[in-house]
Structures are given as C-alpha cells and as structure tokens.
Image (spheres, rainbow, N blue to C red):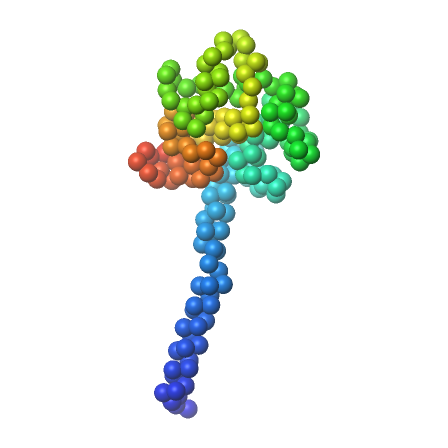
Amino acid sequence: MRLQTGDMVSIRRAITLALFALSVVVPGSEAQERDANARDAYFRGVAEFFSMPMSEVSILGAWRLPPEEIPVALFVARQAGVSPEALVALRRTGKSWSELATRYHLGAAPFYVPLADGAPAGVLSEVYDRYRKVPTAKWGEVSLTDQDIVGLVNLRLLTQTLHMEPERVLGRASSGQWVELYVQLLRGSGPEQGKRVR
C-alpha cells in the first residue's frame, strides 16, 4: 500500500512532535547525568583516600549528607575512633562538625594541611590566618567552623588522591565546590593540568 502525501506529512509531524517531546521531557537529564558522574568520580577518590571499597562509599552516599561531607564523617570517625554511622546520626540531630570535633577531643591540628611558606590559601584564607596567628602547640585554641572543616578535609583528600600540591588545589578552588573541583582536576581541565590517578 502506497502512502499519500497527506499521510507522509502527518507521519513527519508525528516524528517531529515525538522528538520535540523527548527533548522537553528530559531537559535536565544531561545535567543530572553529569552530576551523577561527578559524584561517582569523587566517591572513587574518597574510597581510594580511605582505602575502602567503592561500594561502601556509595552506601554512605545514601546518608543524605552533601557529598563533600562524606569524607568529613569518615575522617572525623577515623580520628576519633568511632563509627561513621554514629557521627552521621549525631549530625542529623543538628550537631555541627565543629561540635562533633570538640565532643571527640579533636582540636584543629588533625585538620591542618601544610602549605608552602607565604602561599595564598584562597577560599581557606581565613582559617589559615587563624592557624598562623597561634603557635603550633596552641592549635587546640584555633576554632574551626563547619565550612573550615569541610574545606580542610577535602583539601587533604584532593591533594593526596590527585598527587597535587595543596597550593595548586587552592588556586583552583571556589567555595563549597569540592566535588566539581575534584572532577576538573582529575580530568586536567583548565590551564593547570591535574594528574590522573591510576
């Protein structure tokens, strides 16, 4: 059976509408896929840093914490000798990371990441200024905000897993964007090339 011109036009219209509908139905799917890929790459870095299976980190990803706080839970748990699950339970009750660090007698020293003398600290300038104003023996007096703790733990994670100097990492960091920064540095995007792990 041969299609008539009117039928062909109708079929073309139907195909065009279907393609348009697909593009409208899933407008953010590409961005969501990019975000999921970035999170997975970051979680692989977290798994490497803490020498744990990627599957465990993925499970931790279901804790309803922002991804950049998962290494904080693991780091504080390791330093304090408690389970990450216990820390997350306390965090969900409204406790801040600084309160939890104080609760487990963690001063500012374990969070410190050494920088070259006089190197700019970028988004972490304020906390490094606080460290620099106090002798090392008195770092227990340095107060850390949640943002400081998240930033310092992620700085340590990125420098060690990507084998980069902290100054280079901080030179590319923007406040609170640690997952995206990890992926950028891993892929070597931008003017400074990050080293691939593996």
